[in-house]
Image 1 (spheres, helix red, strand yellow):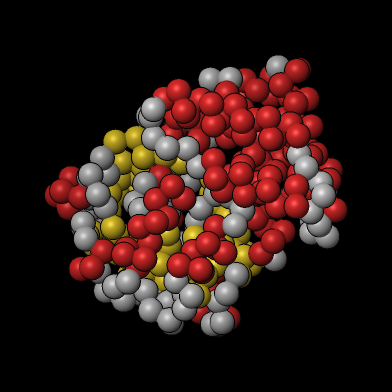
Image 2 (cartoon, helix red, strand yellow):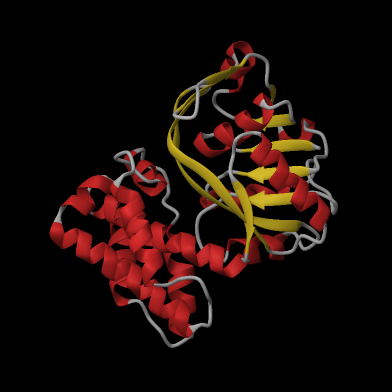
Length: 303
């Protein structure tokens, strides 16, 4: 199968790099570091073993890329307005498009823009970042869950899972809504709190007050999902997420990096959409609503 990576940052560079290293046919769309990667290749420093792609297939224009069997969209959701233009030459009605993006409601909005796409949610559990042109630093974890939103080709989805696992990326198919909301249990507290308090994940959990606040924010999501009839999001999962983060390398989530580099933050899908859904279901999340308000204030001050 032919894979294309739309957005070769920390996520796209790592997953696409692993697939290419394992012999898969992978095309990479790059922007600022296109010339560098074309001349020097793609370097990935990883806890699972460093590697270098000497001559990856790189493009600086999506219209020059071939129609692909699978497209991994690794852009920030703040750039999703660009997807119709980026995907028109790369994806057709047979292509499986995996949105490896944060938040709730992403697939619904992308499907509205492009009704014929076969969409799958990609829930990446990974600490990785692009640290220099053509240079990805993978710190820990790396598995990915795939939640089927509108993919009709089950055989191709199974082949994608197999290709990921062959490349050393643990991958599983999971129920779509459960997967998106389970990811929100980690994303909603840690992304915003690291921005609001100018810190990293480890510091939040070492402090008694913020550790308890993180847990309370997570439990708001548990109560809301239970009220909405979404299974698999419970108190045991909250404790697992906290324990997992306790042993994680000190980490700045994607929203913290966006804030630090004065880029737009993904407030709409990480906060506003899920908070709206919870309110409409009659189960508001007040602590997370307060965090959303703080983030909107911080972003406004940066303009």
